Length: 376
Image 1 (cartoon, rainbow, N blue to C red):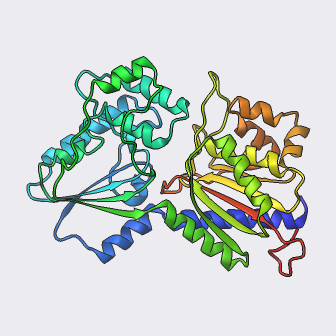
Image 2: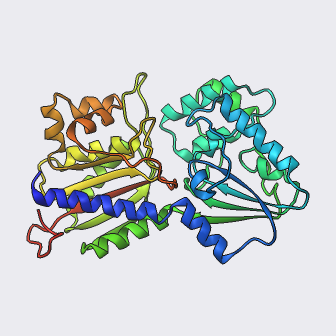
Image 3: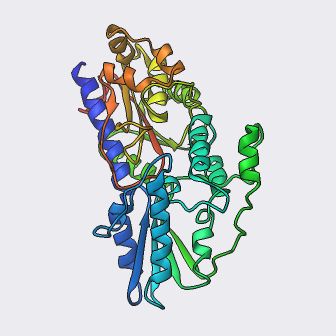
């Protein structure tokens, strides 16, 4: 890579990291509690991928993600026991982040672990939006969708939330397999308003991450465009669309956020939605030497692997092809991660202590730029 490209890639990673750091679980919970300290002793329950970051020092329970297993059910049982046996009158403080759907579970009567696993595996390969997936999961659970809070029976509780979804689906979607419809339609949803007296507070959101990323881009000297559209369509189509938008924009940093989807083939390869989107974008910007594009999950885990996403440039496709790989084949077989590994474009961060969906950041440089950050 020429020097300008290397600098641009470093800057994109720094901009992404600034967005993630702004919504890190530990600092956002600490800041909230500093502004609004609890009155008296509290019992703390932290659930989700950011549980440890949100509640340092709290004894945790290892369990499975993204498909629940026996440890998920054990975690659910211990969670209910903890609520039922806590000291009388002590307020509960819930710290909730993304990933709770499979990490802790208590299935409804008549629903077994095999039912949960079959549904979750199908949902993860379906290409459905996460809001729909979560609504279907709720149908089989005693603790999702307000069920856990309803167990409090009106007792005092607060919940600090790191949000990883956009809105809610109003009903079961059409076009589902018959067995999914049967399994989910036999279960009623928890009635709304089942947990009066519970104070809910959003302490970290995708908007906050996007704003922080944009601020860092400006500090680095880049004109910056913050796009408000929520990216939730097919990852391949989204990657191409965002790259085409970047081609048409003047030199700047462009920032998007969301959670695109991927419909998995019968035997998927390596990688997740963020890597899939990045590879699709790489096809569009191939040969355009003034462009770089990053797509990464804010939790540091894109799909079942250990990578957060991908950071591609105008030579990414050429580098992968020289290693004997075909980008079209990789996309068709959900194997973007293997291609991006060969091209040297994977992003690996480890767990970040948060989860507010994905960031997509494009950089179009000014070839006549006047400072160290502008121009290749």
